[in-house]
Amino acid sequence: MTMHHGARRRQVAIQILGMTLMLLGTDQEASAQWSRFASSRSTAPATLDASASSEAPTTSTRTLRSRPSWRRPPAPSVEGEAAWGENFGQTLVTGDFDGDGSDDLAVGVPRDVLEANGAMAGAVNVFYGSPRFVDDRERPEHGLQIEGNQLFRLTGTVGGRVAGCDGVGWLPNLHLGVDSGDEFGRGLAAGDFNDDGYDDLAIGVPGKRGTSATRGTGIVIVLWGSDDGLVAEGSINFASGAPALICGRSENRFGETLLATDMNFDGVDDLVIGAPGDRFQQAQPGVPFAGWVEDAGQVTIRLGAPDATGAAVSTFDEGWVAYRGGAHDYAGRVMEAALLDARSPLPDLAVGRPNSDVGRGDVVIVPNVALQRESGIPFDRTAPYSIVDPDGRPNDRFGSSLLAYATANSPRLVVGVPFRDEDPWAPSARTGRSEGFDTHDIGAARFYELDPRPFIGSPDGDISMSGWVDAYDRFGEVIAAGDFNGDTRRDLAFGVRLADPGGVPNAGRVIVRLQGQSGPAKVMVLDRSDEYLDHDPLNQALQLGGVADRDDYLGSALATGDFNDDGTSDLVIGVPHDEVQGAGSPVTNAGSVHVVYGDSSAGPDPRSFRWGRQEILHQNR
Image 1 (cartoon, rainbow, N blue to C red):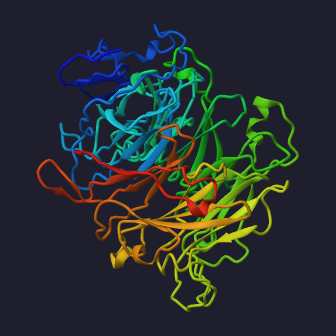
Image 2 (tube, rainbow, N blue to C red):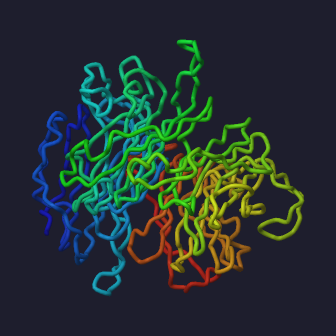
Image 3 (cartoon, rainbow, N blue to C red):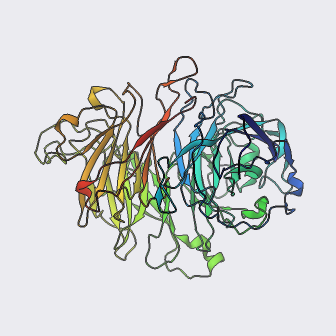
């Protein structure tokens, strides 16, 4: 497939359930034998009538592509214009949206400015991966491509249809206009929700109004993957499964956090949705209204299902509330799902509650009993139970982050404790010496293993980085996992956004813990300073591109994916407050993303590992 000569701008405005989704893209002259977008793709505006959403479109059954031959065309720019405070890179997620075997990257820009009215309503940039090897030959340019990148934004009017709001779905006063504070892209999740072989993208818009009188109600929008990548055609949006939420309550923030996982083990990904601002009425016998339980938060599950149309709302079930917290728990802000109990073949849901018990925090494990009706599998443990830190103290914020992953022997759950104070005289994780430094709010992480019991009792180990981090750095706020050196073991990456590399306050850094055969084998530090480069005999430091500035908050978001399909994980680092070069002058707090590629060329020994190339992405590149 060959693209036409001459660059042109493509805008596809798709009306989805009363809301317009703008897709901006760039086509460039190319001599490539393959292109993501067909030159014959329609650029005319189209509408999707929600009342006819059950009709099957003309889309036929899709199959995965064979590998194309590649020659990269001249690189165009990243879509969007960098503006003050947009926070490009605040959220990140990876998935294979075009089914070519290489992971792709979606970047949330929750305060992106809409040129039409100046509203900081949010956007999502999408970049597509490309394979490192084609026909056993290595390509000089591989990984994430600027060519073919996309930018998704919302526009809209008052009035529209929202699935799950009431029996009919039509709300004449539903506020679907674009406003500052919508936060389109604040929540992101990637999964194959309709079982067509392509990952789809769920986008949370937690600041979206329910009506003109409510704010922060929130909705979720789902874009379908395809052979052409993510497409706006046929996209759906929905609010909470509980009708009253979209119709009247403010500050639920439905969609602030999203999680894709197969909850009922049917081979189709499902969507877990957090609404951390949810409140509910207190139950008191004989009292019609006993007041509200404020900021309790809730977690909703909507099951995906095979759907050849890729457009019908019925692709998801109507959903149910799987968990609801207590007063000021903000349940749903931190979520994870994994096989946490050997007695069940289905994943359980872990919900972090760092504010509980005067900030000691806990993690609530919600057994997958809600899916008995789907699976018919009997359970002998039905009630949610909590994991607590036996050494916890007020304001430790245990449960501020969660990560579940599998080891060679058992599943593991890592829990962030970012406000934890370390023993100042404990041996430093870096030097092994007792140094007596200030360790207030230095932070840590604890891990639990299944052996083969449920996660109960004391933790199986601590992850401390004293010596690599300092007081008030809050290590443990952000955690990700990947296999960066191709040895099949899971390595851990920690975002430390409040670190002061080179003495620059809150410039931020990332600490990677490479896993060896019998334990951690190497710690690596990634930041924009040269603090460790002169004293780095073990190759533990990597200086990232760019300049370390005050309050960059590098490491606020992390993601991993294999963008060049070479068998190693690549690391994505969000720098949402980075100053970047705009069209004419530097732009403060516009945000950027670092991409650092993994490399297996040094062999499986983590001590010999070196990172591959790195690059920086931002709008107006």
